[in-house]
Length: 453
Picture 1 (spheres, rainbow, N blue to C red):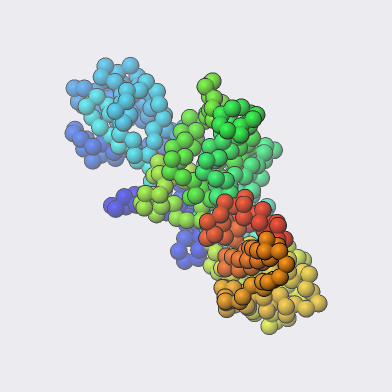
Picture 2: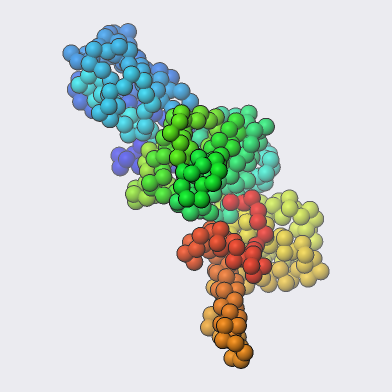
């Protein structure tokens, strides 16, 4: 339930001892003025509101009709329908006959005001017995709780928010949910907000018509439409700019959108949306960097994935064996202990990349272990070396050689400092992610890509 400070109870399965629970959204109507001021009405199915005694919410007020309106929950949406009242039904000052409510909306029934609120209700979850669920592996309690939650929510069509540190497995979790849902035969489409310039995100999400802007030489189908009858995974949702957030919110609520540059009828879509964030989105709403109504629209269910540190030593051998059968058994006890003691700041992604290195160094595992230890003790790349410069020949050639040497050295150190996290590297360097990828390809520095978002 919402606390007195207005902060909703967190959803969540996550790090051990902090988040051994999960939650789903619940809705309430709170009466703001007389005659029922302060009264709270939970909304689980439908509430008929009016003056007549047979209504679910009876409001004896001269401006309220006998049967004024009905408020009906439809999955993760709430529909308001006026029943031909005398004085009308208003949402945020606009009269409506039928409309969907957003979190925080003011509902006026005659002169009586009600606030529509969303909060989170804690769910009781027992850890699953499995140690593997599609693409997810783990025997620790936090992971088995997540397995239990996913098994419960995957068959629904509700929107879902996955929160976790970079590399904790948000991409794998979203694919698992998709594969266990009724949409498994439909497309699974990923859209990474951090990899697309803000000016193109609307076009990428909704598509555009030919001539909509400079460079739009043909019609483009957006990700929402590409994922029709399937699942759209929106990664790095915390990077979505404030001016684009209401457009996404409107599309999710109305289940329709228009392509950029279109003046025709809106396009309907049937897509389940799973969003992922590396940041605490509720904290982002309080800081004014994320819209509260979009937060509640996305967080019908929220899963907070634990870090690899919080999962404990029991999950480490299981993950290694899942990617490289027999590899963990071949390590010496000393090397196993070094891996267990490592803090894994890059989480599952860092572990997977380490396993890839180790697979190619089976004859000299100490080299892979030393790289692991070096990364733990010195995350920063060495500083202060002078780049080699050729002081002969044409000036332009010497300058080009110096620039290439600088770019390669800069990118190498950047990847070292961010532990191969491309999104963070792009932000730290102030570069568009696509441009960063092109530079990494140029100098053959692209890291192995994986699904562990």
